Image: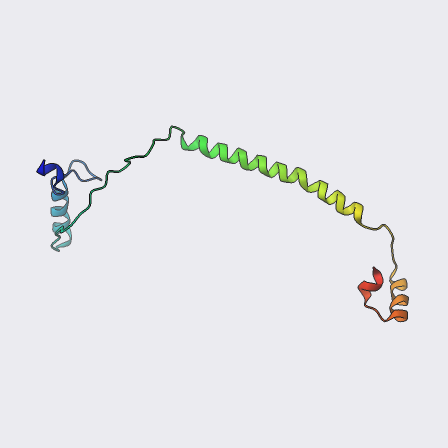
Length: 115
């Protein structure tokens, strides 16, 4: 039970062939500095998590299709708004000469006269 709880006797997470103690010895030999572990906390990785069965490629494809459908909906809605905006515009054409005459008479701004 002591070996189960002791960190140095546990398998190293990145290379299960080594123990943590062996890995520390290799690191000390490589860098030439003394390494000591004073405190540690052991986490159980994946505890309480559910494994997803869907693969990554299928998930990306589903998201791409949803995005394409949303873009198609926006594209279908956009022309309706443009048609409404075009219908609301007046068809009367005002020449620049007429606008100038109104400006001279009223002293209002160009855009006000054009309206």
